[in-house]
Image 1: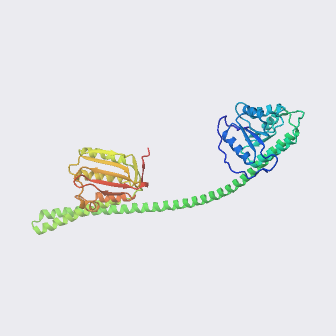
Image 2: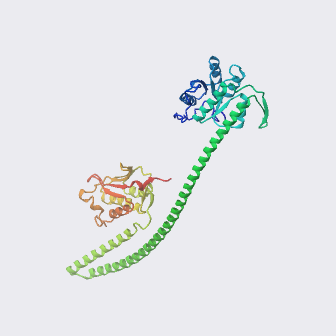
Image 3: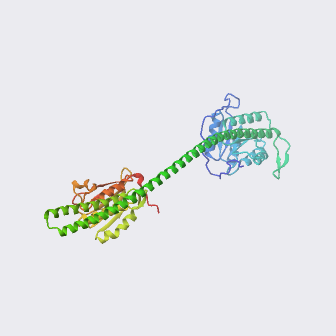
Length: 460
């Protein structure tokens, strides 16, 4: 237990108390109204709050910041009572009380010590100094008024006569108290009253804690139930995912076998067509064979497309470092005699594992169709909506205005016409979009937009 300002060092400023109007007010018409009370407190905040309480109660207040200043004020004009803090510079509350009680001129002035908590050793030390009572922080205005009225009444009736000293041992130490029984009784009753009040507050707090604990127990039980339900849902989801994965594997196996068999038949068909072309001289027959050969080549391209397309969405999307994807393409770009510039690529994007194919297709288009491409720039930046914009720019011939949307259609293009179509499909799995927004004749510019929840800084 600590006295005065408790464990705070001298000079610290406590939290400012709220200056609320006291619930209990003294009778301002009583004969003690207007009595002059000296408040000794080195904390300006605490002193002003005590002044507010006392002046609201109808008392006149004088202020001092330490014991020496208080003694000077007392000598010039005797107060009706002194309320003093304990821990102060120059002279503490115990020494101030001791000097006042040792002086016949001031010994009859009631001295109330202001402390934060009660401890038997502090009570005894206050009694040894001659204190008449204690007031406990935080302040209770009603208790202060009651205590002051009792002390002023006792002082007016001279109920604090000198009494032979009482010696006793407490805490393995010898103590000597000169206070009369009424002072001791007042302090003990005040201590008991404080203990009862704190015990009541503690019981109320315990009741509130019990209610909160019950609410918490109910919440925990609800959370356990929700967690159990979630575990069941997760287990069911995993079973469904496993069943779908098994079905996909079987379907892929079947399509792979079918694709292989068809390719074998097409290869044989092309061989027969070649034989027929070498043995025929009829122009009409040769034209029919040419068309048949073109049809078989078209079927082969479609089979290649089905192989590429079936891989999309087979695996779960994952976070992918754009820097690593671009680094793989650097040797290819360099070998084509093209300079690569990058900016702000330290970002991971949540996308299908085939995301790298998108950038491969863009680079392939620049090399194949850009005509005289000398530079490729890949940048990343947030836009006004919080999404991430990935820009792919080259300095080639660009895309004509009428082809900007058509280049993403299946079959459009100078080769298979599948690259950009597949790129848009790959990105769309995680709601990523791609558009061509370049200026024709000044280079191609593909703008890839990643939603706000689809990117994050690289996790080193």
